[in-house]
Length: 157
Image (cartoon, rainbow, N blue to C red; front, side, top):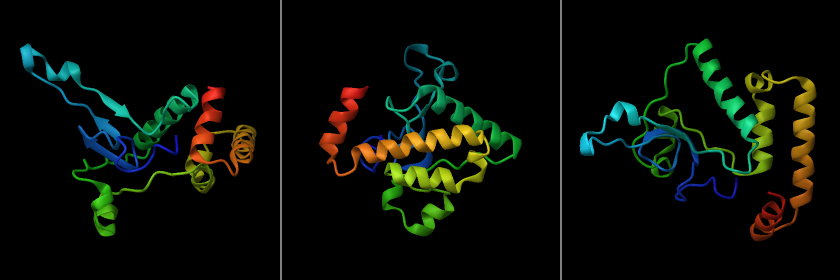
């Protein structure tokens, strides 16, 4: 996933919510009234930061848990981002609450370890096991170029 999580590749690169933007982490999909279609019945939101290499059960559980955490803490909805976060200034990205998504497995591990809220959603046994598997994965791909990494994952998945 990390090879695709970069700006200008029609995948998520930033923690953004946007309308009809294929690079937003949360994308509000377009609707139409063509042919009498009811836009309310077409409403759809895509989570674009995960793909088929993710554990679907874990990804869905974390998405739901994050939503519940936002409700529990009464957090406001994030602002809709208009424009390309990559071309925004640092103050503009900060004002919009944007952060770059981890672009490597080491960065994702570091983000997980640095987030006490997310770590608190899991038992210590799960966390230890999860991090152990991810670190073994890192050792397996160490020194491989992107094409070799994709070939390895392709043979596994």
